[in-house]
Length: 231
Image 1 (tube, rainbow, N blue to C red):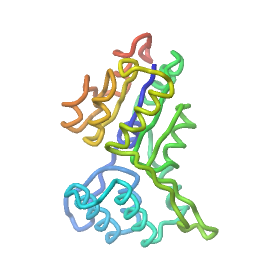
Image 2: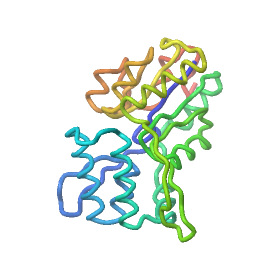
Image 3: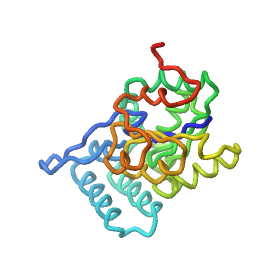
């Protein structure tokens, strides 16, 4: 009755971003694409925040988000560059058709992501998704620079909190809800629902999920009452 979904790498395509110095690439979000566009120093600083998070050196997810936005602001992210970079990201194959099938069968949907609200709103509008919960909402000044931002604890344990809230509001049981994602940060929420899908996913998520799929539309095989898009 309810499908929760990650956004970056799940709804939208993955793209590796490689440091221009030749250092190993790292993954794949709008965050890292923006840092890449802003230059080598921004990209290195962003990579440093990832290492800090993995080492447990932030007090909370919000602290990580706040520092990441300050890097974008420091290196001069403009509204024009943000919107242009976002516009260049494509949906994964089968995503738009699959959501049409889901909504045609009365299944409610919700994005829960550590990404940007602007990107989540794009997906909501295009895919007619019911709810969205994202990490940061940017506010722009008259000259197109970042003026301020609003943050939400929407990743890791925060994903679980949102899923529980929405299930409570609708009165849905865990068995009536599903989740699809691709990252190791999705493992906690994958265990929170009755059925979960690891889409081209990190091994930790595959281990935590009910099913591993390589094509997005394959999730329809296990959702009662739905049909595959090509039937």
